[in-house]
Length: 352
Image 1 (cartoon, rainbow, N blue to C red):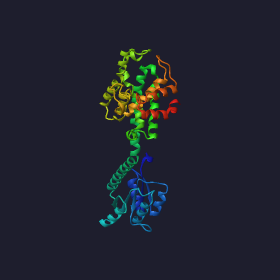
Image 2: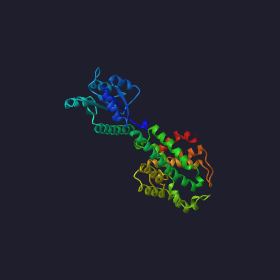
Image 3: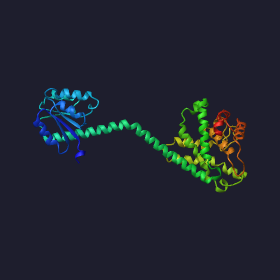
Image 4: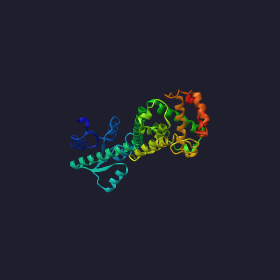
């Protein structure tokens, strides 16, 4: 279609050359002719051509002067220019190219050569613009790709977490509430400068997403135990405790299937260590004090707070104040003393 043709401005003070050039080009391009550099600049006020074919020997303003002016203006400096001239000396060509021209075509025109050179230069210019666009938008593309990966990871985590919660229907909303609790604690830790070295490289958004998988091992626990409406027997409780190890194993299996494992590293720590206790009496490994990963120690407080303040078939919900008292009394026994202090300072946020 006519509108799809690229615009070429042909500049020459010889009207016969303008007519010849127009006849050669008009089948493939939209051609605007200009008998002088002044007329060319007038056309450029409202048009941006794909290329300019510029005669050198013109009165008033020659081609060399015209290209200097073109290259000095931000709006025209990137328009490709091909010089047209009867001159064929290499020194003349060098002068033209050094001023910014992309090619040098001698007159009279060889029709096939003129068309082919224009075609090649437009192709090169198109590729240059594509590369420029790519470079300018590379950061945006990387950010969009990263966001897409994070969305996919979060969808995976959320789906798996919901699968666990659907089976363990007596703890509805637990995953979301513990996630909010962890967010409060991590922000408070950073604000207070506690465990600064350990937390400085944390990707908080990613670890919050990963926390959703802390109970993923419950997928491997029998429904008879998981859905039991009353208190578990010792034997059943011992079986339930295996969910921490099961969770770690499930996440390790997922790790073997993906190269992106940072969020899985967080998830594995949460799953494996959130039932360890400061005094070493927890499970599954009986870790003690700072040998328990910091993420596990943080999750332990958020997890227990939610368990205390939630209704279970075998117990009523404790008040916020009672939960704070129980966690405070567990400082140095079940919980990291430094984190208990952090929890106390953020207790009002938990209540809210």
